[in-house]
Image (cartoon, rainbow, N blue to C red):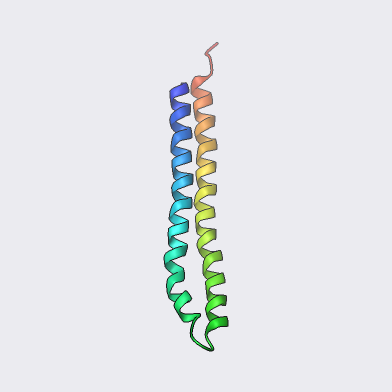
Length: 88
């Protein structure tokens, strides 16, 4: 069953790294219009406030994805352990 464990670890790592990469791209793209707005007199503070809220929200979504991925990995480990258990 070590192949199953390796596959589980590979999938978990791919989802985790993928979520982090997509999060970074998401934040970069989402910040572009706010970066432009922050260059306009009088909009600097509102644009920064919105950007801060946006980054927290986007980060929270990807944190949830990574947390669910971790829980799924734990469940998969428990299932593999039960399958792998020697029969008496």
